[in-house]
Length: 253
Image 1: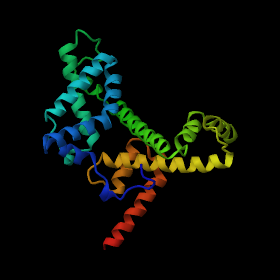
Image 2: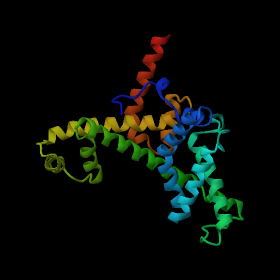
Image 3: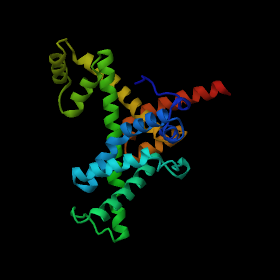
Image 4: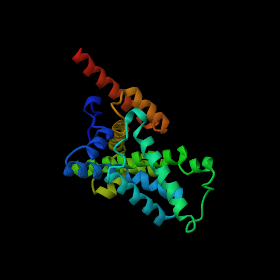
């Protein structure tokens, strides 16, 4: 996890990983496929569970998604046709419809799959956005926790305490953090920690979004943040990214 947003030219997007997953040596392909499933498997599972409302069914469809990806069914995916998450959503839509048609007797259907308009409800934007958005947030929290584990500064612990109960005073949060760590943390220390933790969290969230786009500009990232209702977390991080990118472009010109 970096302290500052990376230059856009240095960000490896998920589309580049998708290409490696279907156009390389066997070991390279396997590693890329595993990386993609690890990165967004959580979002896929969350969405499938919300759509199917059955843990076993969700797991079965997820395994089919992973199997088809591994055998190369998605090698024709093209960023010119849309965003990475749109590609994933379309793939899941067809898998869910197929699953319900083949196993409809075993599951109580949420809609009549014979009705094409109802089929699209199975993969509605709002539900998929929630799952995708939550996965981005979860990954950013995990990165902040890893930063704390590696360096010892309680960025994750401090911000988590505040977010979990925003009504608590700084003194109360500082006291609990002192108790957790066995080291004194003052309200002043806490304010510095929270400021730094929010900055790190926002930078990581911007990176996560950038990686899901193909050759993203800062404007592309902003549109995606708006679409996923994440911009409120990332305004200053996006400004830092724009400033960094402008500096790079000035040096190159």
